[in-house]
Image: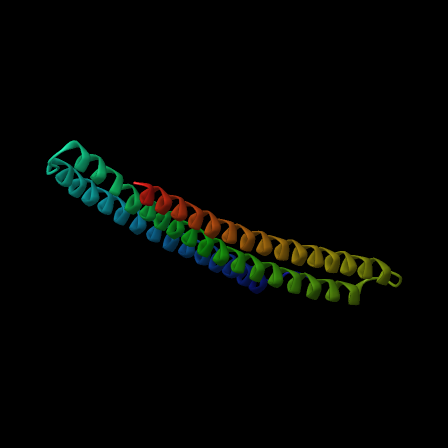
Length: 181
């Protein structure tokens, strides 16, 4: 059994397509992050100017302190929104990368099993045990990979739930602090 030039060309094309898919997903994520950062910087700048103007217009120290305290809640909410947006972009990019990886692993497994079948047809008598052992190892590896993927997804879900709970805790703390003033 020999490797044909067409097989090499097809494998190279598949590898380049995978690389381009990953690069495109990463570029999209970087673009989203850049937009989020630009928006956050612009918003922070505008808020700073508005806050300074409001503080300069304060008539006495009590109003100055009250104004200063009132700026905390919107800042905390914007920081939470920013963190959530960055987390969503990172999660989306990771999900896309995982899909590409899973697809390539499935293709690799399929090609390997096909190759193994072709080799076993031309193998000498008695090599069935070795071929069966390799197929069994491949199946065990796939099962382990599937379990690892499930655990990683569960960990991601737990992390998302914890992030949401932390955001709500910070919001509750900020509202309680605001109510205290």
